[in-house]
Length: 334
Image 1 (cartoon, rainbow, N blue to C red):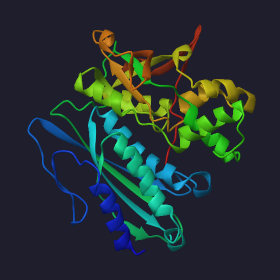
Image 2: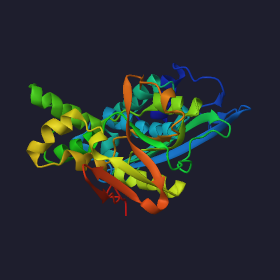
Image 3: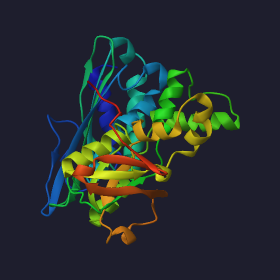
Image 4: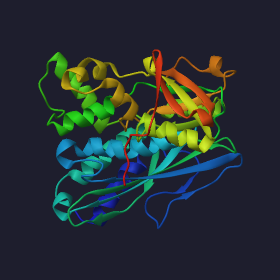
């Protein structure tokens, strides 16, 4: 099919889904039109996924890549305490890839995740690239006016929390680099390996937790863990002009990482501290509001891993009787 036939097909699929209130015009015009409401602020985020930088074609399936492309942007909206509402996704692919079912399967995966969070795909673009796939994901969300959760609101004495567990996505990446793939043997160990691979290939954004923390005004500052805990806590502390102390024993390491990676010369704690793409939420809470935190949201628990300190204290990890400076060693593009 040509580009316009493909867009018509996507438009037809989207027309069968609920688009929610506020959408004036979706796919089919030069731009989407969304009505604004009094008392709400809009949240807009954009993410690029570049072949051989952010993913490898031989390591994933198009549907999983479609889910990840949307998930990384949903995670950004969650980190602002917002509710995701609309998405715009553009792809550039080589002509040989266009001749396959790649684009169809990619959007199938994207729409599957969009349906789960009631996000409407309202536009995008397609283009031809010389030899690599390029994906541009944009998500628009909403939050209560003046109540977006920023990185700059943490205060000394606030408690530091993370959702879920850490290290699985980084471990999955190491396994992919060593040749592991999702379609493997069906024994108990391979099930654990598959779960690690899926953490890298198809992360779950913490949309529910983001909405609760934002709507209930519980988080003083928040960021999603995309570059790695060590890097992202540095971003948060810099914006808030504070320091932090992290209890190493309290860092929630994924059970598959703890069980498997030690045998593969991979340090579980280092993967949890420096590995990126967990897309968990890292946030701070005033001690007065800690009792108000839910035990779980969407089945996901949170863990207190430390406390915000004065900026002069820096960012330190406490490990038994010793402490050491936590330097940012997560992902850097340049």
